[in-house]
Length: 326
Ligand SMILES: NC(=O)c1ccc[n+]([C@@H]2O[C@H](COP(=O)([O-])OP(=O)(O)OC[C@H]3O[C@@H](n4cnc5c(N)ncnc54)[C@H](O)[C@@H]3O)[C@@H](O)[C@H]2O)c1
Ligand SMILES: [Zn+2]
Image (tube, rainbow, N blue to C red; front, top):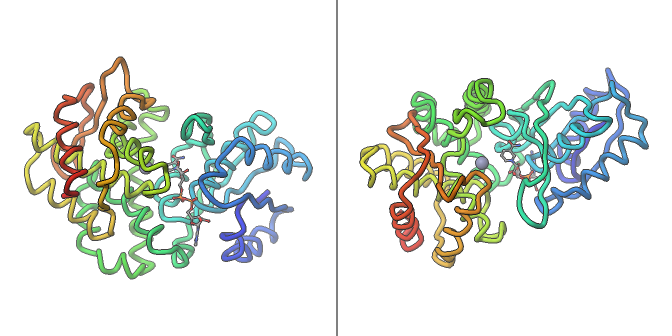
């Protein structure tokens, strides 16, 4: 059963179905579009449709869409008959470079994002970069935040490729997009393989920019900023914090920030309230005993996880960013 939404299915459904129907019996379930539908209710809709269409333990769900569809459909696959196969066919840049790989699935509750879920790896991920041609610019740039993050955290060569090919990336040249998606998937997979359930610290490196970023995203009510824009702010704050702690030099900071700026990811945040952001940082599900684990970069391609960051440094950099975004 293919799970998608009207927008994605309308744009690219025929291509997928023409190919699937040659080999499989398939049905289609369309869920509503948008993060606000990443809910138990949507998961239940998918599950009922699985049952109505007679899916059994040998069936598979094909998640065809961005991260929202991927997360909900993946979650439904994780729990339908205690788990059936899921194939991820991600159609946004964010989903191709990040959410379709690594096995995290889930839904939001009104109490918070991603509070319910399961680890459920796809048996296959099919990323067709031509689907990215129809993404609007802000959605495309949103995915670039994670692409840049991968380079900053783990792979200098990959980061340099982004800088050297910024124009071609913006023009969405297919060969360049293929290189980016493949590179990001390799980087993410290499981390996930060594720390699947985020217990050893390695996978936590992928949370670079996300501690402050998630708090900023929440403080904006999930409407003001896209995820990528919020974590871009988080990366800029983390980079400046690393500099003020003497962990990294000026160039490492400016090259990250310039890369983010070139994809319009640094947005003014003047109207956000610092107190609220700090409170959110402490209530992050990854904060332990009032200590904030934090990812910092020593240099491009070399991130480290520290068990506790000096909160005054974090507050100062947040303050600075809120007043004048770099
Ligand atoms: N599971 C993970 O590891 C993981 C990692 C990162 C993010 N996520 C989750 O991913 C979600 C965000 O995903 P997203 O940024 O892809 O958002 P999204 O799924 O909401 O997609 C963004 C918009 O683009 C549209 N769209 C999708 N493909 C398109 C295409 N090819 N052409 C035109 N429009 C298209 C969608 O219909 C939607 O309106 C969040 O819920 C986040 O929590 C999960
Ligand atoms: Zn992210």
